[in-house]
Image (cartoon, rainbow, N blue to C red):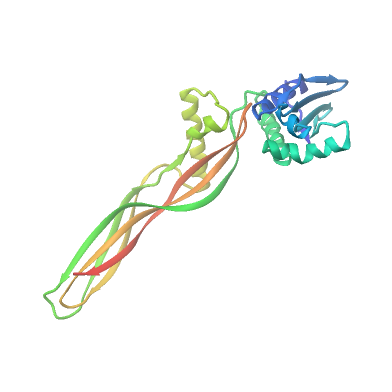
Length: 275
């Protein structure tokens, strides 16, 4: 992959950030190497797996500065024999519980996040990569009951009932998982709240909701009550909420996913029974 040139960002800077990123993924990283015009990061899974299968997952990242950017090569560290190379691709990665393909993709996204914007490497703000919907849920929010008494009449009676409910359209991002999923990012309270507000704003923008505002739902229901009958009408109110996840890059931590939930509307289920 080719990274565009960013002022003040050298290959050694990128290499050290990649080395730290791999260490947080559980790899043991060697010292950053300089070979001619190339900067190299090598890392492998701790040797406990080598005792069992004869090899441990190893990865190598090479940075080569060109006139218009930095070329980055991500690959498996070269092995001394074909059988060891085969183990790198199979048993060792499986034993570690890591997919080489997904790890490579995450690392590429991490490198792109470091180059994003005009901030120097390591000081960029968390950046949203995408927002993905995962499903909708219904939340009960109360019950309204109406009774129409037609017990003293010998004919049908028709009544119109107004179903009305005031509600606030809210949006929430589960920020607490940021600390655990990103390896313990140390935000100040102000930064934490600012990021939460920024993420919720982006979700609201996606669903064309500008602010958390109170709204009113109204609907008229026509009910026919048989003669000599008292009819009870029950409206079971529920909110319809969209759930999903926000995928963002956190400097020096990589990719983090945070759940979100936003209210899309309110409705009710109608039940009737005679007394």
